[in-house]
Length: 396
Image (cartoon, rainbow, N blue to C red; front, side):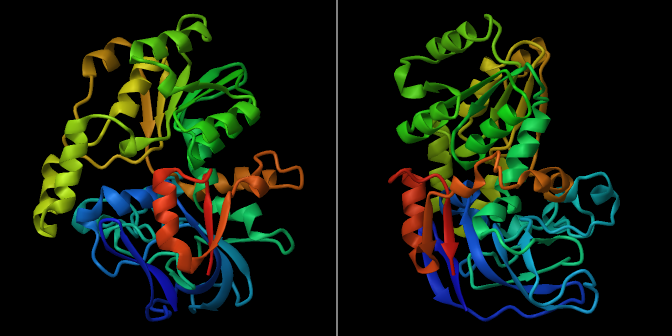
């Protein structure tokens, strides 16, 4: 089969690799009809390269048709159409029972002290072959895949694999409620969807902060109060502008949908780049023991949120020695919630909303539909935020 394969920093190739096969009785093999390119994939493209191995298959957002099932997958049959959550969970352990599927005790990567295995996402999460491919082996298929109705196209449901539940959890973790205010840092796929969900859940004021003109314009057209980072000479000016529209206090909640890819500390950027240039074993140890993130987005979120407010972090961070402004966090009495989205925790809430009314605009969300063979160019396009790209969907 053809698949998107990692070979090094900014070195993505589409190659022919062996077809996946059933390995466990709880496996299924799915023929991919669409697979997304996620902002998290860019971390593998640039930042988290020390944890990658040449030959790793990328991608974790998949929708397709079941081709084959193991003997212990009673709920699926060949020909079923499914969307596959990005994390692999059993559905029956204590963590899954608490709605914490990303901490699944059956699939935890204990050798690295990490949570549940993820498709296409570094050795820290099991180095499971990913979904930017023609076929995907799906472990724990008795629980993970979500059966879909016939009719609507892939764009209606593919975001259930990651974007929708990640944005939904970010907004829920932010404790957004009718009449509240929320600021979203970063208007990429997750941030844009988080704005839409916050408005759907009744937020009185949704603020979007970014520096990419087409993303700001898109959000403004959807009723979001937008602020262009490039319009301010100093952070203090942005803080004052946001307070002006929030009764002088700041928003009730802030969602950091950026993570470590934020434009920030030169020292943090230098450390990340240095790790990418080191021999793999050296770089891995550096990131595990002394890794740092470019934390400007998180520090901005802490400064923006009102006293007694809530921070919700959905952007990926990977450092182990990140400095945190503990005095400010304690003094402002902030609550912080974060983590990978627990996809199956939220899908029962989301699926009924994927109706013909399309309240989240999922049918118009994907900006670029591309053949899988164009994946290398798509990664570069998405990283550079060119051509109005918001969401890329590959058609194998």
